[in-house]
Image 1: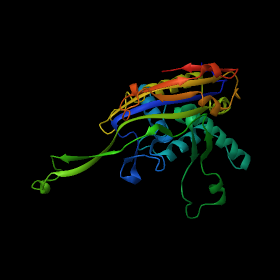
Image 2: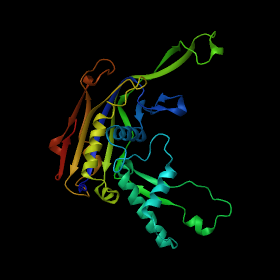
Image 3: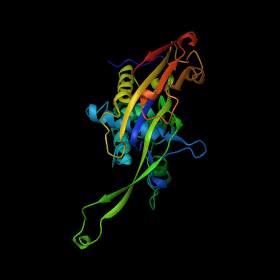
Image 4: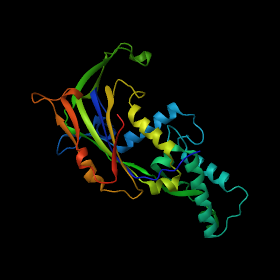
Length: 303
């Protein structure tokens, strides 16, 4: 039986990339994301969530309670309407109050089925356009589950030092069509970062977990996903990526015992070498000032 989490958690996760592109920007020719003012590399929260979803898809059976709502080529409207019909079967919905109750039932049904909704939240509103001749009642009763606030929120991950983006020319030996057989080899471009160590932050709310049904079992799966998400997401474009540390601050209450930024300030990343740019994780060390942990907060070392 699932056990609801009753404590707040704040966490720091570190991962690195070697000779790869950790998160390309499609609006910039798929260049690695960079803070233009500081030169620090960026990896979006959406990218990390995608890898967590992919790990759950890979390791769990895709059915309740570990199905994934946001997956490749999924038709979200169809899933929302299906949940509405399932949760409100046989109900007559006419008043605004009945509509709110139906939305709540739909939201609860989807939280129960989909791991990523339970974890990260979602906007469960359909995007159907108004139909010609549609009555006001039909518009009011359009099937939706409202908005779900997820208990786990992530920040962008940021490299601890500025990164350099390298551009590599590559050639293609084969052609797609016979008409291109006599053409010269096609040239292409590939962008990589020689090395970068990235640090991100996350927050887990026990109160929001209670609303979505996020459990202790779900939490353990999330930690496992952060630890192993790169092990099953290999590609030539991403180079060598690895989770290097997951530092979890566990509060002894739902509201928490200290501000998150004060806990994050206890974690420092320092260089172990002074000459030249960093080219491996061995060029860094992670320091945690455990002696300064506030009362009621415990440090859990996951990796």
